[in-house]
Structures are given as structure tokens and as C-alpha cells.
Amino acid sequence: MTKVLFRDRVLQAREGAILASVNRLLADKGYDAMTVDEVATDVGIGKASLYRHFRSKEALAAAAMVGVLDRALAFVSSIDAPAKTAAIDKLRAIARWAMLSQLAGEMPMLPVQNSGLRAALGANQAYLERLNELSEKLGRWIAAAQKAGTINRSLPPELVLYTLFARACDPVLSLLKAGGNHSDDKIVTTLLAACFDGLSGGRRAPPA
Image (cartoon, rainbow, N blue to C red):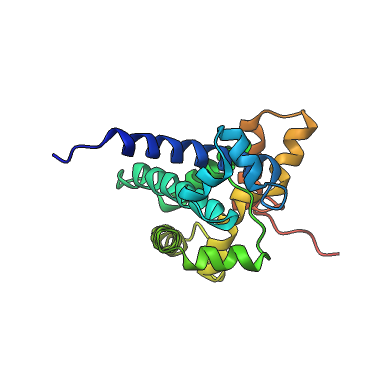
């Protein structure tokens, strides 16, 4: 068995603390408002020490996303085992997990139009590998649900996939929570119904 040196354990613990801070700040403030100085202060280390772990703000965000994808893949594995569970129920479960994660402040909020961040994510092999693995797993569930007729067969599978990914950063969640009129579970249950059943509840609107 390989012996883990005390120095390595300290570095791992510090890196974990950095990522926990980044994840929280990204969820609370968003990428644009978060600063490297703020992360260092929050963790209680110098900026130079932080840069020994992560060379840039973009690298911090990419590492946070790797952590999110690891948690998503672990959840997917936990619900994929029961062979009798319908694909549509698995898709609902991962959408629920993503929305509850956002409401709990565990989902980094990243801008989609930041070129530097996009480049950092595109160059991060760990991120790309996990994103591809998650996309493939969800893609199989989408195909099975469309075959079973529980998801509209006319919809392009990638549109369904992107719709599910979008639930992790849906601004409606925070707006409803800020209103204070509903519990987290009620918010998620309502948005799941809107996502999977549509605003018409599966019924065609009468002609105008």
C-alpha cells in the first residue's frame, strides 16, 4: 500500500477547502463577481499559495465543475442499478437532483458566453471526460424513454439532453425560493411537472 505523506494530506485538505469555497462562491455570487482574492481570503491562505494549486480563476471554475460532474455521475450510478426502473423515472430523478443541488447552493453558476472560461473548460481533460460520460449515460435513458413513448419521439435527443442540463442552472428556482412562498421540494416538484409534462399538462390547448 502506498503511504500518503503528511505533506500530501495537507495539500489535499487545502485543495478541498479551496474547491469548497469556490463552489459556494460560484453558487452564491456567480463567476463574474467571484475573485481569486476572495477565495484565498475565504480559505485563509495567501494568494500565492492558492496559485500553487490552481493557476487562474478559470482553472478554479473548471475544477469546481469536475467536482459537480463527479457527484452527478455518482448519483446516476446509484439510480441506474435497479433494472426495472423506467428510463423516464431516472431522468426525472437526475433533474430533481440537479435542481435540489442548486437550491442547496451546491451548483456553480457559470456564464456561457465567457470565452476564457469556455477555453479553460475545453482544455480540461477531466472535465471533458466526465461531461462525455454523463451525456452518454443520459443519452441512453433518453433513447429508452423515447422508444417507450414517455418522451416525445419527434424531439431531437440532444434537445432533450440540453433541456435537462439547463435545469441545473434554471433561474426560476432562485426566483421562486426568494419569494418565500414554497418549500424547496414544492418548487422542484412544480418545475419537474413543467419540464416533463409541459405547461399544458399534456393536454392540447383549444384552438384560438
